[in-house]
Length: 313
Image (tube, rainbow, N blue to C red; front, side, top):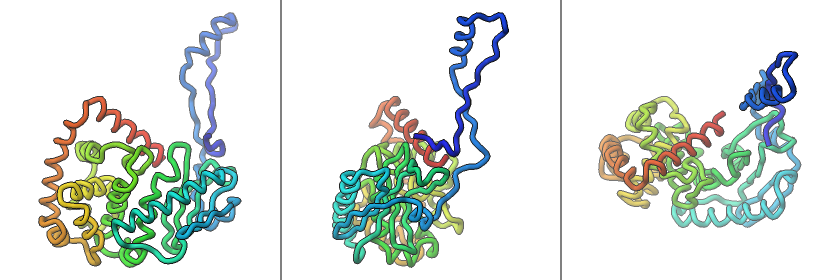
């Protein structure tokens, strides 16, 4: 279902000469194989969390660690219950890896962009630091569970997140890359952001080959706030490589770093500077391409590009 409030489909009908018979007119219509789309001058408006909660009619499910609110128009009770139990399972799995958690019940909101209550409005999956709550958003191309693991990972590291995210140099890159690392270790698959089932090395090689992103050595120490692609995709693939070549325990130890992220941080956790580690990773990436045929790699890249375009449109 599309957002009819923001997109109007206009079919262009060619003007035929007055002497044209009905058969010719039909042929003229058939030749117009693609319909034109006209976007209105009023794009979708971001909705605040407080407005979202006020607009939607909620029903609730409670589990030991989560209080799940779901849009009763768009979610069936059984569907919401399945997600609630998935949250519990993932919480236990993450805790077994990181030994970090949260107290009490975490508030989780299951939303759907196609809900009548949200027509003309938009939001995305996110962790609300001030409310200590998670908003999982489903769309026409992405499941609500796409970033479920990453959001729960943030919530379970709430103390570190509150202290460092956007404050301590290099730490936002660490946190978001670690969320990708945890996602791929806990729940890899076609529905999980940011790789959607594609091999992380294939996507990383694709991005690095285009030369549009700075090196991690620069981005990790830059004073600017890195883009989502740098934090979640490129740096996430890098941490997965470090987990494979060093160990997952080394990556988890790195994720607990409680100070600025410097070259010394990587030397302590992985035995080499960030420059050297990235150089080794860059040399490793082309070797992984041999695991797939050209057609398989191309399919991964095309599918990934298509989802990312829709996600950021």
